[in-house]
Image 1 (cartoon, rainbow, N blue to C red):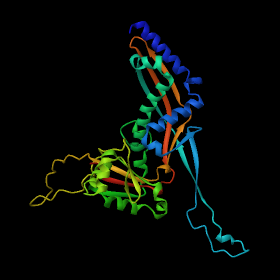
Image 2 (cartoon, rainbow, N blue to C red):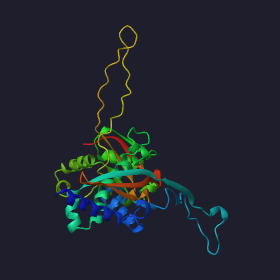
Image 3 (tube, helix red, strand yellow):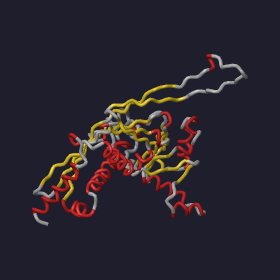
Image 4 (cartoon, one colour):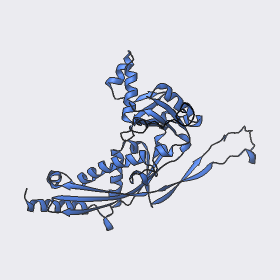
Length: 337
């Protein structure tokens, strides 16, 4: 393909992108909704969570909950007394969307067939959504505002936010005993509808537990090897989230060196290498996770004719919060495989 055809190709692609744009490069409302649907489709976690299109970069979401008994003993023809009436607990959760950008280079080779045979706008939307959805899932899980990684430091993800109930797996692989302790740690009020809960963990952690079940010399053991049905514990599925970490460091040892013979401190031993083979597990109702995406998504292009590349710049804002963090449990210090 020569220089002229490269230029023509990129001009067509640039025009296709411009068809998506509103003033200032923003997607039209219908296109923004479609882009959000593509993002959700590309992310395992967002497909289970509650995704909220935000009308502004900051948005408060009202929460209502009946935390105590509402029924009282009644008598015919008599209303309840004032002290027997109950009120719901009102609170608010604020989503504060953080700014993220993506720059994607699309070569003329990757666009050539799409221009002639496909809907180029759809192709570009899907390619962007696939990449952005994957990265969004990483920060939704691993986000930590104390992280040295500027990308992860934008917001706190679910591993950092889950703090009220924590179980230490003790450096062991995932077992039924760890799962038992996790379920027992969750307050009973959140276990009323267990089928709404899920164990969220890494791919290797789920595979390791599946392999343990498959070692049993039973028909059920063969089932875990031959099928891709979710592994269950007490009716709660264990779901593998691709971006869950599998290289977290083991907890630092608190041991102190023994005193040297004759008194005085012993020479400090050289520090042992820290194993980075730990993962984590979160027990929660995935719908409890709120992912807010500001509706104004911007997509702009820049053409590099000599390189034969169309650079697409996407700008969006999002945030995530547990609607009710008390209904979650985090398992730490579990060996990934």
